[in-house]
Length: 111
Image (cartoon, rainbow, N blue to C red):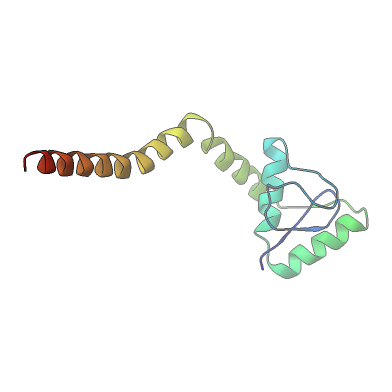
């Protein structure tokens, strides 16, 4: 199972952006979410070391360039862009199904 460390208490979580079951902290602002996502992408040994550092109360050092890049990616994946993508991805199949049902109904009515 893939896990990611909570950057507040060091406990293992199933996903980076969910609330921690141990301490209840959920990544809030863009920087916090970016830090948790960067931590989730580390190799397992690095995640384990990071979790131990958090538990020991040490300052957690993540690559600032990676955190900055993740912040930019999160900013790009916000609001209207996500809605437009979802509409494009979900809209086409829905239109195809509705169109197909309309053709089927028209064919059945012509019998």
